[in-house]
Amino acid sequence: MTQPSTSNTLLLRDVVKTYAMGTSIVRALDGVSLEIARNEYVAVMGPSGSGKSTLMNIIGCLDVPTSGTYCLEGQMVAEMPETRLAEIRNRRIGFVFQTFNLLPRANILHNVELPLVYGGIPRADRRARAVKALETVGLADRMTHRPNELSGGQRQRVAIARALVARPSIILADEPTGNLDSKTGEGIMAVLDGLHADGQTIILVTHEEHIADHAHRIVRLRDGLIESDQARGSVARRAVPALDLAVAMGAPAA
Ligand code: ADP
Ligand code: MG
Image (tube, rainbow, N blue to C red; front, side, top):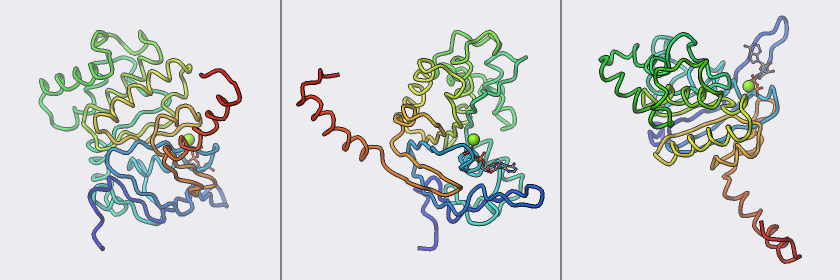
């Protein structure tokens, strides 16, 4: 088969990304091949410096591979000019960052509407879509507030609404709970779980196992390479006998 299948939301083949650091070259990604289908829920894990953010930047079309190919919904991204990359970023990718990245002086409705301003969508439609996105994340009653009037968890919900508003193919979240306490982080994961249940493709970076447990597949990177890639179901099946054993040995049921 020569044509990439469009049922694969994304397909990376032998992706290498190098950075020149003075006289040396850093191989941030050292030949990554990865296929992610529509409506997958993937957690990317790995030690600091293993290439997680570089991978997310390439998937999100913020950066292009040094070599290798990247195909997003049947389109070869690696060969595109920057103007087309920008268009894909706006229309197909919803980004959520650890640091929220909201405009401090704009109210949250305006923050969420912003990605649509560049899309030529009429003002009334923009507003209606932004309101709907804020309803999805449970913030319909905060629309006139500014980011600094909200908690960290609420700000991250705004960022998720902003990521959703252009109805992207993929939500990319780089450590979305990294700046939140664990209870608030679980609330954010509940939002992502809901989006996934509604059909959204989600790829998130995390270093916390309990956050990765929300995903259905875990890709582990090390030194710019995929070290393992497994469905989380297979991990859970292995965990069951251990629990049975504990119960059989008289431990109280959790
Ligand atoms: P992670 O997100 O897993 O911590 P990164 O993808 O940020 O890892 O980085 C992978 C490697 O590439 C690291 O060694 C990092 O220092 C290097 N790197 C990342 N971005 C750049 C850059 N813009 N310039 C130079 N080196 C970079
Ligand atoms: Mg990183």
